[in-house]
Image (cartoon, rainbow, N blue to C red; front, top):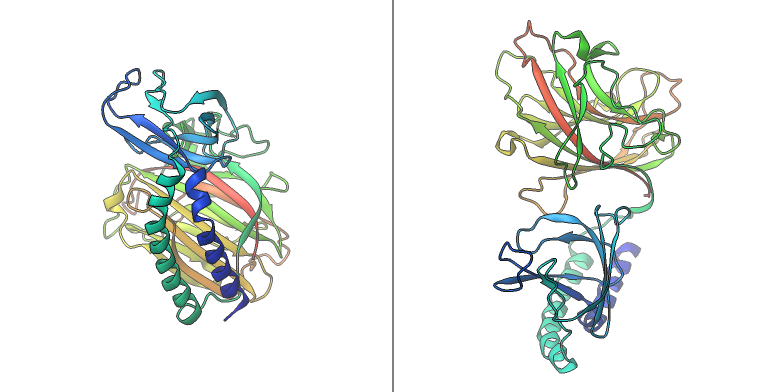
Length: 397
């Protein structure tokens, strides 16, 4: 058993030992689902929140994410902070001195009074027994079936977070580039976004010089002027997260160019040449491509059933100037999946492998880049894509 397997099993045991405490401290917030926020009658649905912890604030009646919240309790009194964003960093509205079981007509919501100790014990015992059984099965699999390996990943720091909630193309982030194309709608703000009010849209029309920049038909945002958060160098470890939506995307048909549309470059290497990796549409599929490693990974065989829906991606990278690097690729389709799904892990790869040996740094780009396409080839004239919630983290691997 590796040391990480042992630690994981130990954590599971500690979590079980705290089951009673967790049951006692969870805060419930309930809403009347009668579509009239000023009435306190009819069916109610509730969500539970860990006190003092920033959590997504979700309407339990319709499942809509409304922002973030931090809730706490002292006896029969409740305290709540509501935020416009899920990270609880902006737009806080303070609400104090809520009394349990009292309906607040402004919201059509209330905090249920906490159960008695006898009720907690009655509910917790069968739940605890079930948890113990499940933990035993999980621990058995970890110890004797699953090899977790010797790597763990922890986030150290958020280097860049772009969610466009400012309603501006640069999201009020100094030196964030929105596009180099000069068409008035090459980059523009759209609503709603992935989780909030806004996202960015990029548009490219083949044959129109307004969408031609840097030698190609493209419109992309870029972080190369953001120091240090928008850049990486050899030896860095990074996590990249991005959400994107293919807007009214017309399907590829035989006879059209097969080069594809590049829609996210988390590892663009300075000095020219290929990026270290990119995400692209290829015919009617989504791919992850490492051109200088000659590797292509199929992310989704056919994206057409998910027209105008968001896709979430997470890529962990150990940027190395030798075959000791790492890529871990995750994907989520929010309309059908709650959690990220591991697609593939590439170990012992030369991840910082530029075409230009003098390259000293890399950066990220998102938008629409249409290499090798033209109207003469019969390619789709105009394509549009939305991006939101672009995050870059410094991580330990």
